[in-house]
Image (cartoon, rainbow, N blue to C red; front, side):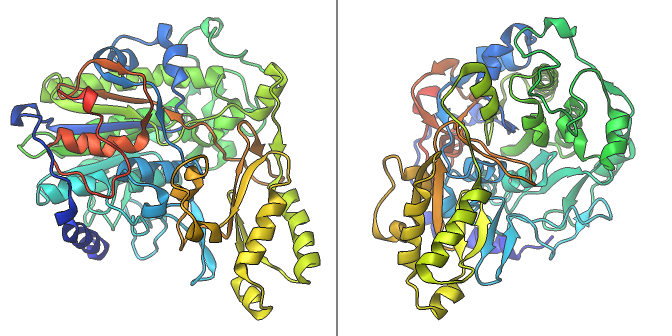
Length: 546
């Protein structure tokens, strides 16, 4: 296992130990959970819980709500709302300005290229011969809660993560985890990186030998209940549903046919069976690694998906989405029962949340509800912007990279033409502000001159990293969404995420006032009687604790 990045992270944290806030020991030793399990459901809307409530069984989502501390107004407010930025923020408790994960990719000015937030070819895949394991948390600049737990127990605690997607697994695990595992779409195996694992565990090899991915792609995906009973969703053949490959959009789905069309197992992430694999793997991991069996608290992050990259192909109100959650409800119930069996009821702390919510497609809101919203074309806007810059500053390729809601300028060209970065940034921001659908555009130079940590500009300010963010950043109006000619749109503006804590360490209650996703880290650390780092952006949710 490569330890260089881990050692650096540990040393930085230890050096800042004197600035840790002293905590009152509210929990007795007997009340400290043996195992913390954070269940994160990608792109989960909070209203799914109420919408599908009558069709959930007793032991899954209903149990979490009825027996846990439910925070119904939790917000995760980020400039670029993606699984990468959300996962890093939720599991470090700090904003992108500090942890550095400002997007899935960003432009590295020194290397003169776009880089991926977790890609790292210094490390190799463990568990298969593909390159899907060449990943690390090296670009994550802050310790995760798992890192902090290991530091506070002198590396006695065990920390793991499980997910279908590599980004979720790596950024929830952090730097010092004992293992992070994710799904290899090329061969259907659960794999890891040499960043975490030196020798692939025998129990994982045995799990992969069962070839669950191959088995699930040989069957149909039919609804759990009769289709006509899905009254909480739109019609199965709803006209705005694109479906798989803009072709298949009604039940039942022949997964073998879709697999043949896809060519690999990636599409399995968009079906309920991807969640089944994650649950089964997590249960095997808890058993094989003996989590929660000694005096040191262990930590496990489990990430499920909500149709993953096909979310927009069906939409939040589709029968496919409802069926996914009814089946996920069963998986969570089985996991909760398993935890009760091996650790005793309530001896684990289970957290349900999401690192990124989903939003309704703009065409759906406009067609069905006549909402005053629309779509914004970044490609058309940039084309007009380039003409404006050429007229204003002379001919030149001033824009080096167009990222998500941000632009990077060609700094070498600006220097060669003696153009002030502040001037071109300001003129560009003013130009973009004229487009319909744009709420605000800001030059990066303004963050060095003013304090935007409060008010409506705080979302951009908290997400701005001086080394990684663009020269101009903008936000769209609420409900507006970007559209592209030749690429899939991945965009969210819904900041409301689920947040429920369940176990003997928390009260059964309903918190209705506004809370933040960043509150998860300090609250869990308080439950574990561990110090809260000074850099945490969130607060301890005192009212949910005994």
